[in-house]
Image 1 (cartoon, rainbow, N blue to C red):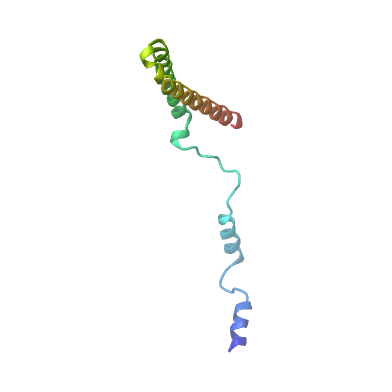
Image 2: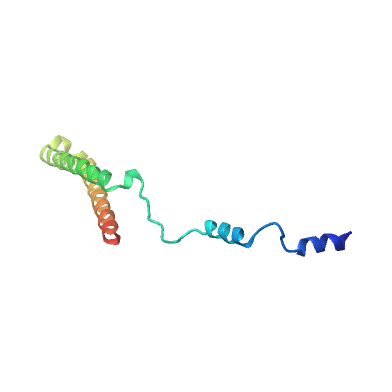
Amino acid sequence: MLKLHKLRETEPLKNVKTEEITKNMELDKSPLFRRIITPWYDSDTACWILILWSLALFVFALTGLEIAISTPHFNSYVWFPLALTGLIFTLMVSLMFRMIRRNIKG
């Protein structure tokens, strides 16, 4: 009984044509040269909108920094607009580098 089972496993496939096998194998291959699809939140339009929004917040933070420095009562709160300015500046620089790197790669 075991010998019959082993013989059946080693027998060639009689009903399947070799053209069908090679055609199915060609369909299963995945190419390595696919185009990279960027998500909507990382598109050029979304990045430009975020940069412009960040620029408005940057001006707002600089205005807050100026008021906090010029008013003696608010001198202890200078850290908040300063931190906001630094974070927004970092975000804008990061977005610009991301867009430049993406446009260089093509």
